[in-house]
Length: 202
Image (cartoon, rainbow, N blue to C red; front, side):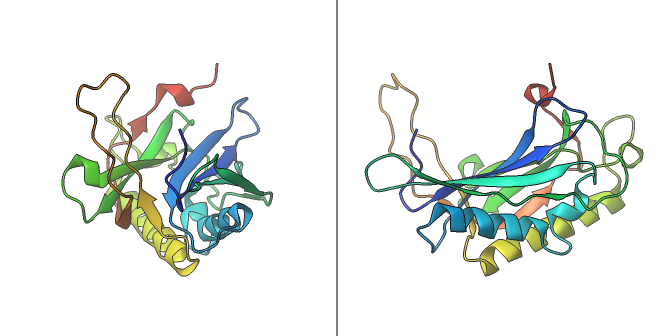
């Protein structure tokens, strides 16, 4: 499915040397630039900025490259890659990639449709999560601060984060036209660690 015209779908690759399959952080942005490589660069710079999301990622993990797919008004998306890489900024070893931090993207639109999700693997040390999967309050505060820094850095880089809306599934009797993408106004951290089976290596 093509991306909404003018909106970019961005994928930041995360790779741990002991895990065969890479993970990824994905998000949509509304860039001023029409060059997808420039868009990818701006998102990467926001991710690795001081006190941003890089600070949460296990230092064994390589962050990047970053790929952007920019939607066009007719035709396929334009793609561009920012090839730079760096390592995470957290010294402690993290939980395996199947246990990820869940960030909720909050917009001005009400209801479930006005929210989105973003996952951060390799972002919490085992000692900061209890036996029931609850992340410690201090760690949640630190993650929220890093997420706010990331969102602010995206805005400063002219790539504000957006929530995209899917089209109705094929065969829907009365399909609805998806609304325009919504601007993300804040990111909130779930205190419960998120489990994603598809992130487990096989």
